[in-house]
Length: 120
Image (cartoon, rainbow, N blue to C red; front, side, top):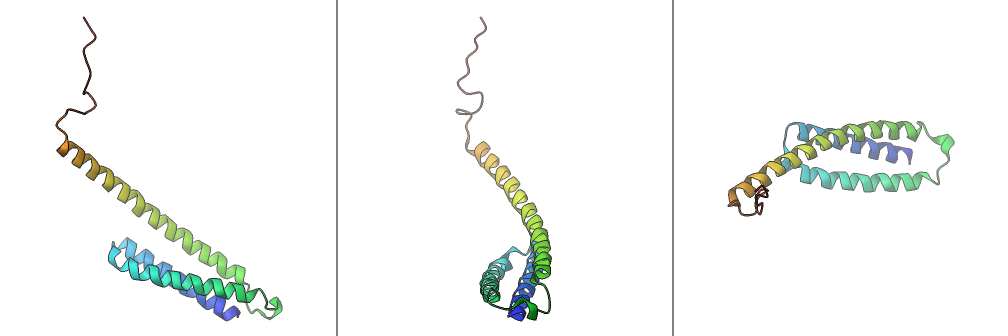
């Protein structure tokens, strides 16, 4: 059972490494298939964890917490890369939205619209 758990963690780590590589290279198209594999691997990990609950801990060759700590580090590195991409996507979205707004606007409803000069 511990082997199934270790294999699942290892598989997820490899997928996270692949995802990080794809993101750094801006190869976004391949992420869809990778996400399917990650979901399958998470299901496998979940099942392996459930199976570990009934196993005698003394027969484990390694501490699962060590594997989980390593996985946590990979997840954090992956989160940072994803965060960079999300911030960039938000910036691009803002630029596009402003460009559309400026292109479609005739100035009627702009920031200065409706003001009257109150100085007399």
